[in-house]
Amino acid sequence: MKVPFLDVKATYAELRDELDEAFHRVMDSGWYILGGECEAFEQEFAAYCGARHCVAVGNGLDALNLILRAYGIGAGDEVIVPGHTFIATWLAVSYAGATPVGIDCDPATLNLDPERIEAAVTEQTRAVMPVHLYGQTADIDAIQDIARRYGLKVIEDAAQAHGAAYCGRRAGNLGDAAAFSFYPGKNLGAFGDGGAVTTNDKVLYERLVALRNYGAIVKYDHQFMGINSRLDPLQAAFLRVKLKSLDRWNAIRRRIAEEYLDLLTGTPDLTLPAVHPAAEPVWHLFPIRHPQRDALRSHLAARGIDTQIHYPIPPHQSGAYRTAAFQRLKLPVSEQAAATVLSLPIGPHLAPGAPAIVAAAIREFAEAVATSRRYLRAS
Image (tube, rainbow, N blue to C red):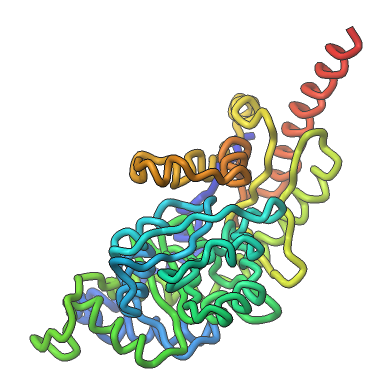
């Protein structure tokens, strides 16, 4: 049985009629930049997150960057970011002209570790940017306590957390502002690139509306040095259709995650994802850790099981940050995660029985490695 990592085409097959209707509605409207379709999606997504405002933009990186620019965070400022994340989190800070200050992760959840924030705060620190990694919210109450003490903005990188919650509150309504990505593989994905910012801050919202559209509040009245980052109405229409299925799809992801946890508990040398007591994850990814990750991945591939590695090179060790200051940075938990994390197939259209096949193949590998190690020790 072939087990794909994620079947993105299946969402179209499931919702074909509604998506085709949305396509024709937009094409027949003659309105192809911003407009009513985007406004309707912004209202619906803000309501879904429990936030007052939403600004739809071109992609998740722009969403993060525009939040920073709207807050006036730039040259000479610092933003605290986690060491284990997709590089967009760091790039957004750099593109704003500020400096990303990487701190290590919680060894259990691999989310930003609140206990490490205070030591990283300086007079230049303006914000902390927790990532709700793999679809699990960061420990936001602990982060907010520190942020309030030092007057810092809390900017959620919620690119992987559509529908995730913390103490009953959804991602997108946990900090001062939140950035989402609608990359096709996300829990709520477009059929192309897309992103959004949610916030309860009306002033920030109004500034973002201008910044995404060349800095214009009204046409040709450019109050800010903005950019062109606007969600296409076609993608907004598709996202409106898919948003109605998001909770149902997330529930399927949770069931698959529970099956993996049940089947893989007790597997030798395997570290399973931990969930913070206050978090309600949506399992954008299901990351396991094994000291022989690459060999395990090859073993699974030989059995037709597709996996992915998130993320093999920590941002501070990437070519993009090849400076002495970043190269000296030591983030052992993040670096170990980069060498050991393997993401298993998960998604709302994963075939029944697939988790059991994946788990059996993992146990086969892990038990063979453990047996070999015991044999070598005995000899």
